[in-house]
Length: 122
Image (cartoon, rainbow, N blue to C red; front, side, top):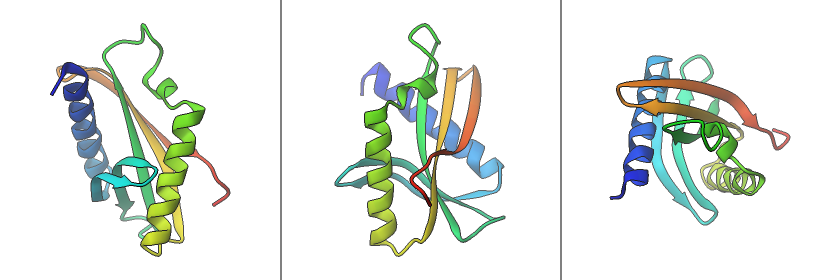
């Protein structure tokens, strides 16, 4: 596993811990679909009818832009297609795509949660 992959795995772990601390239940991790991978699939206790597909973006610095800027229009299309595919396959009617952006390193980082970041009319 190279440095970039290790950083991504650490970011996904940090995002998972954050979501658990916010009252979410993790339904899946690194779920593969024909349209790409979904980093995390979660459900919040406050709204058990809603399934949240989470894209995690992690960067050690903002020199190349903020982590959330890594969600390009092409990545958005893949995320929406992957989420829609999974939802259809599992009979999920209410869902949204969130982005968790992590900037820093394990010893010190900033995490931002963008709820319902990508909209497809749901």
